[in-house]
Amino acid sequence: MTRRALWILQFALVIGCSASRPTDPSFITVAVRSGPTTFDPLQAADEISQRLGQLIFDPLMQWGDDLRVHPALAERLDNPDPLTYIAHLRRGVVFHDGRAFTARDVVYTFSPFLDPSFTSPVKGAYRQLASVTALDDYTVRFTLKEPFAAFPIQLPLPPIVPDGSGDAMRTRPIGTGAYRFVRYDSDDQVVLSAFDHYWGGVPKNRGIVVKVVPDDTMRGLELRKGSTDLVINDLPPDIVYQFEKTGRFAVNRSPGLDFSYLGFNMRDPVVGDVRVRHAIGYAIDRDAIIRDLRRGLARAAVGLIPDLGWAYEPDVLHFTHDPAYAKRLLDEAGYRDPDGDGPLPRLRLSLKTSTNEETRLQSAVIQEDLRRVGIDLELRSYEFATFYADVVQGNFQIFTLTWTGGALVDPDMLRRVFHSQQLPPSGFNRGRYRNSQVDRLIDLATTAVDDDERRHFYREAQKLIAEDAPYVPLWHRTNVIVAQRGVDGLHATPMGDFTWLRDVSRIDPARAGRHD
Image (cartoon, rainbow, N blue to C red; front, side):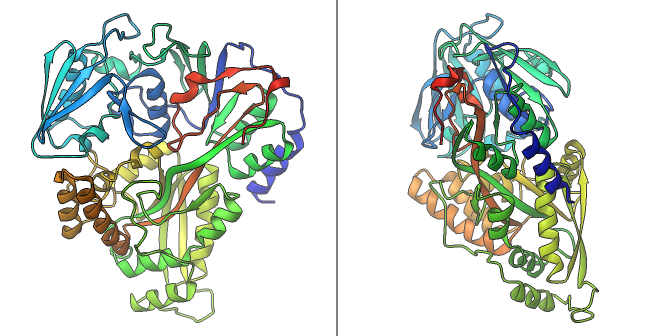
């Protein structure tokens, strides 16, 4: 019996057990697959660190469900000329330690991006920033090196940290967010309590416990036993399906932005050949992955920019499932079948993944798809920290990861992922992809002041990137929240963020209707 079949059976056997509520009904417990790597929002690169940051900190601007930026700590953002943005700050906001939020905190947060030696996963978004200046306690001027129409869209990151906070943010974060940090029991749980002086209104619960449960099956069992209130996008589709079958849990879903893909080391002599990358793209049956592995909780992706995005370009190279064409491409690349229908492969490749079971299952399916066209794919799985370090350092032939939603809202992400000047650690061009035409189009889009002009350049760049295939797109996630029936206020946002948790509360289970 495969591990997948085993944990589906285990889960089905216990799903009928009676539930019990968490011991403190005033707190909401959320189960996640991994703990944070840091609480410093300027250094947070992994999903859970960023999600926790959404609860502890606030940015100047924030994303709405309409995928547009809206005021947060900045009540208004003026643009008096192409090189100047003036942020008018919200008054009466305080940090968790009681200090008043002022322009000094904004300057302190953004000033490191002006230091060439400073590294941060979000630094690439501010390469056009020339200076940041406090005009008074509640007014900040951002001056750019050249016009950058996407500048307001960068302001949801980073969240604002207090002036002079330094390295303390890594372990004892202090923000202006809806929740204040209480403690982190390493690899066990993060405890946050509601901040009664939150400028956006007191949360509807008294706190959030983020429980680290690495095993997929155990997260489902925690929810079924009632020791966890809800899980956000961290249950395998098979277990979501089991919950839905019972009809006794609240399920909330929405089309998401998260993007799953294969990334290639463009310096590798084998996968550096575009014909090999295309062959891999045509060999993979992504429709089967979505239908069978993901239980329909995804839609096929054609590129990094999601179909919900305003600059999405549908008229690009699409990888369909065409094994015969994949074989012809391998022939053209010089990797002919050495023994016809025999067991010998055309070539051998390696794919690095994390130890996440869902990712490993998907990788095993891809392994089988590639085997059928003559590619022997070795799977190498590592704990996430080790795996991610290898990806950042370029120590891979092929890797698989998932970009999370918030990063993909604006097409400027194309620059941070595919521009040749955006190599780690200041950018996300982990495969060391280079195309001077793509660089030029992205640069033109970056400096364009008109959205129609930006859209044109970004769409042309997407066409070239799709042809070069530094990524083989797989799918965009359908966001799913599974919760106890007595939990109210569920809201699966396109970005799968945590900000809405402040609106979650408990109601009488007898009155709880199903959330679809």
